[in-house]
Each structure stands twice: as structure tokens, then as C-alpha cells.
Amino acid sequence: MARDGNVYLVGGSIPERETGTANLFNTCTVWNPAGELIAKHRKVHLFDIDFPGKIVFKESDVLKPGNSLTQFSTPWGKFGVGICYDMRFPELAMIAARRGCVGMIYPGAFNLTTGPMHWELLLRARAMDNQIFVAGCSPARDLEATYHAWGHSTVVNPFAKVIATTEEKQDIVYADLDLGLIDEVRQSVPIYAQRRFDVYDDVSAEKK
Image 1: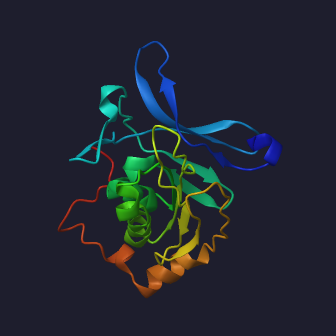
Image 2: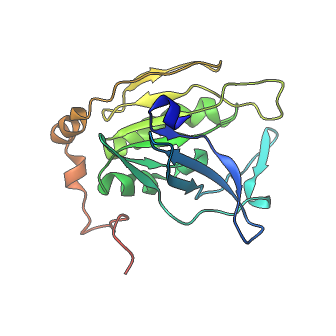
């Protein structure tokens, strides 16, 4: 599909069985316009939650967590990748931004409990924290399925403004990314340069 469309394609996520082991991961693959696999993200943070009387979900009963950050290069800049619950952990996006990524892409399927509360909020928060573009791509909602996704695929700019979104039904979301906005917002509100790593650790620093 990436080759036929001459596009960079960030897939959703699929169960991946690790070669030579019985380990299963929640994995997102990234493909270039030549149809070549250029990145693979294994979900780092597993979705283990318990909302009393609403929903209980425990990915760790089946899946293993990934242990690495993921980014890929395009002619327009580098992008970081996370999967769903990874969005709740700001460190991944912060490290990606400090390593030069212009955006984060999160395939994700928030449910009807967490989606209304946090889906757009988290996308905007990751964009605001790091002054980058952030995209969240969700499955459409299918009430006949066993899992009901929130939907609302959304793109947010570095000012934390929603520039494209949709409802819960199947749809296509388009957004033009003006990369000049990254410099503009970092000059206007220079939090990116004002972080006090003399007071707190730089999470993007390499392990020693």
C-alpha cells in the first residue's frame, strides 16, 4: 500500500509474535514509499486499568512491553511513534522532540470511558509540552464489536490547536503541516529553550 500510494505509511498496531520466543507485542510498523519497512514500534506502556463499574483491561496478561523509542525520517523531518497508552507518558514525546522530531504519531483506540475525558486533551498536551505536531489515529466506532473505540482521529499543531478532526464514524482526516510554526511557537513561548535541566534531569539524555 505504501509503494502503490507513493506515501509514508504508519500502520495501526497488530499483535506481533517475536521470532524464537512466545512473546507477543503490540506493534506498529512504518513503511516508506518504496514499500520498505523503516521502523517498528513495540508499545512501551501496557494498558492495565480498572475503572470500577465501567471497564477493566489488562494488556499485560497477554503482551510484553517494548523497550525502545521509535522515530523515522522523511524528507520533511523526523517523526516519533507511540501506541495508544504511550500517549499518557510525556517522556516519549519529550525525548522525540529533543532529538529533532517535528511530530508524534499515535495510533490508538481509546474507549468510551477514557476517550471523552482524555483523547483530545492528551494530544493537545503532548503538542503543547514539546511545541510539535501530534496526530492521533483511531479506529471508527463499531458498537457490534466487543471493544468500542472512541474514534475522533485528530491532528494538533505546535500551538496545541486542533487543525483537523472527525467524529466516531469511518472518515479520512487531512491536515497540512506548516513546519515553520515550530520555530514560531518556540520563539513566541520559549519553554523549549527555558527548561531548567540544572534543577531536574533531562529525560532525553543518553544513559551512562
